[in-house]
Length: 261
Image 1: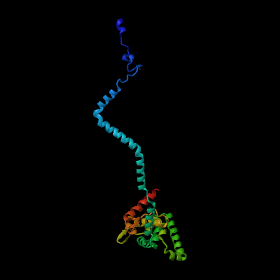
Image 2: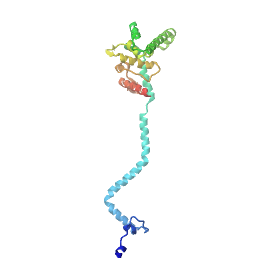
Image 3: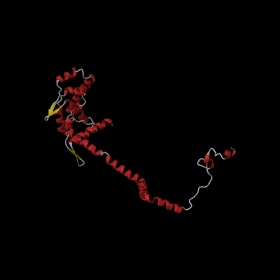
Image 4: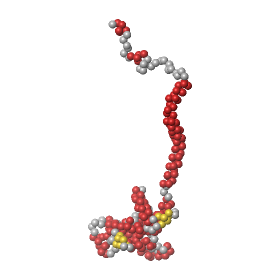
């Protein structure tokens, strides 16, 4: 019994004699023949030489790209940015051409025919009696008409010399554009121009949109789609032909952008 106790294995097992659970102070054993070991390693890896070559090549390419890619990417970004820059001069030129066409004497005459406002006594009575039109709109209308009449009178009396010199005429549309929409809908009626039906709503949009050109706001022009072929004509900017359709898209998108700027 005593002999059995003497030969009992310690609880910690091999760890007590320098196993994984204990640190050993014994020095690590070095390879006796380093060159032979390397040769054997290469012999073992011989079957993987293609994979190793590819990995080394990719590593070299990756290192080269890591050095050169940032500069190339920077140049590419600059090129893209330059291509996306808006040519403000051409935008101003196109806006100017569109404004010039719409405000020409010929176009003013066409717009007057299309709008054909009816200031008859009957309509005046309708405006006064219409309870759906606010008193504020009625007041604004009265003030606008008075302002227009005064401006017309002053122009006729004192600006005749300037009118002959500059070939300009009094433009009522500048003042009509200030009339509230609720009243414009009473003064307007559906009509046709060159066989095309022009609705009251389109006329209101036309008056308000073109009115922007006469009130120092040439960047927010709105034009009814039904009248784009009447109001626009092909123009050329910087050697590039701008079609009627493209001009309509341009002014429509520009008006939308301005709303959020």
